[in-house]
Image 1 (tube, rainbow, N blue to C red):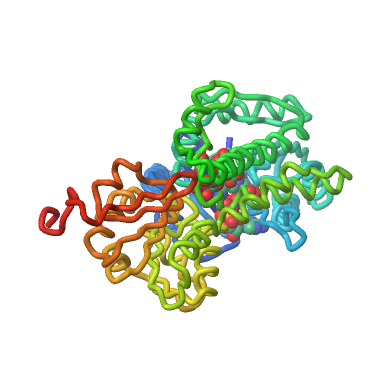
Image 2: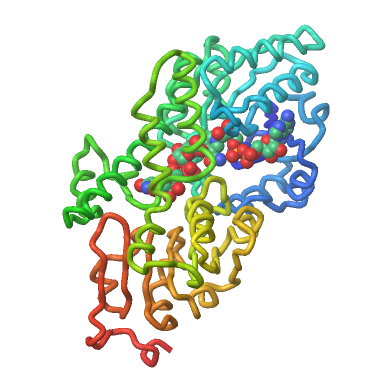
Length: 449
Ligand SMILES: NC(=O)C1=CN([C@@H]2O[C@H](COP(=O)(O)OP(=O)(O)OC[C@H]3O[C@@H](n4cnc5c(N)ncnc54)[C@H](O)[C@@H]3O)[C@@H](O)[C@H]2O)C=CC1
Ligand SMILES: O=C(O)[C@H]1O[C@H](OP(=O)(O)OP(=O)(O)OC[C@H]2O[C@@H](n3ccc(=O)[nH]c3=O)[C@H](O)[C@@H]2O)[C@H](O)[C@@H](O)[C@@H]1O
C-alpha cells in the first residue's frame, strides 16, 4: 500500500516519518521547494526532538521520499493524507484554501481508487466539501473515500505522541475506508475510536477547546490566589489529585500560545456563530488568555514604576519548550508591550531565536548565550521553561545582576529554591519572594565559579 502525504509541516512530516518507521512506503509532497530540498538532503526544517534521525533512517531504508511534484507524488498513491495548514483567517474562522487546493490537486493527479485522509484540523462539513472537490476534478473514473483522522500530537514531543498517543480517531461514512486506515495504524498499537465524520471533526475542536479552557481556568484561579495569598501550584496539585479533574494542563502561567489553541478556539467560536449559537464560555477562555499574556508586564510596572530605558532580558521566546515554533508565542505580546513602555529588550532562546528575529518587533536585541542576556540586565523575564533556562536563570541573575529581580511567567521555581539566592522573584498565582538583603545566601559568586 503506497501512502502520500500532502504538506510537510509539523503534522505532515511527523506523520510521514512515523508511518515509514512502522514499515509503510511514504511519499511526502510539499509546494515549498526550499523545504523539499532540505528534506531530500536529510535535514529537518523544524526542530522536533528525535525527528531528524528517524527521517534519515527511513530515507536510507528506501521507505521515505520527498517531492514538490503533485504528478509524481500522487500517481501511485493508494492512500493520501491531507496535512496542510488551516491558519486563522482575518474573520477568525479557519482558512481552508490550502485544504481545498490539496483536494483539487488530488482529484487531478490520482490514477487509481484512493482513500483520502484529512489530518488537518477542519471545521464541520469540510470533509464532505473535500470529497466533492476531489470528485469534481477527477480525470479518470476512480472511487474516492474520505476519512477524518484528526491529529493530537504536541509540538516538542510529536514523535513520542505518534507512538504513544491516547487514541486514534477515525471518522468515516464508509466502513471499508475506515478499515484501511485502521490497518495502516495497527503497528502503533494505539486504541482506535471509530466515529462518523462529523463527530471526528468535532472531537478535534472540542479537545483543543477543552484543554485551552483548563489553562484559562487555572490562570483565573492563579489571579485570584494572588489576591488571597494562596499558591496556585498547591491549588492545582490539590485539584489534580481528584481523578475526575486530572493533573494535566493545570499549570498557570502567561497563557497558551502556539499554532493551534488560539486558532482552533477562534474557529470553534466562529463555527458556533454560524450555527446561531453563542459559545460564551469559549469566548471568555480566549479573552482571559489575551489578558494573561501581559500580566507579567503589569506586575513589573507595579513593582518598578516606569520601565523606560530599563534593560529587560527575555528568557525563552518559543510558545513552549522543545520547539522552534513562534506562532502566537506569549513572547510576542510581552515584547510589544515592553517596547511600547520604552524598555530595551535583550532576548534569548536556545532554539527559536532565528524564527523570533523575523517576528519580534524591530529593535529587540538577541543574545547568543543566556549569560549574555542576563549580564547587565535590570530585569529578567522568564517566558518559556526550557530546561537550560530553568537550570540557569536563577543562579545567573543572582550572580550577574546588581539588584536581581525575576518575573517568571512559567513558575519555574519553588519558594524554597528561590530563597537560597539573593533574588527578588515574582511569579504567577503565588506570593512574591523578597530577599532579605542582610542575610548570607547559599550561592555567591566565589562559591559558584
Ligand atoms: N502543529 C501542530 O502541532 C498540529 C497541527 N494540527 C493541524 O494540522 C494542520 C497542519 O499543521 P502544521 O503541520 O502545523 O502546518 P504547517 O504550516 O507547519 O505546514 C503545512 C505545510 O503544507 C504545505 N502546503 C500547503 N498547501 C499545499 C499543497 N497544496 N500541496 C502541498 N503542500 C502544501 C505548506 O508548504 C507547509 O509546508 C493544521 O490544520 C493544524 O491545525 C493538528 C495537530 C497538531
Ligand atoms: O492541535 C494541535 O496543534 C495540538 O495543540 C496542542 O499541542 P501544542 O500546541 O503543541 O502544545 P501544548 O503542550 O498543548 O501547549 C500549548 C500551550 O499551552 C501552554 N500550557 C500548556 C499546559 C498548561 O498546563 N499550561 C499552559 O500554559 C503551553 O505553554 C503552550 O503555550 C495539544 O496539546 C495537542 O493535543 C494538539 O494536537
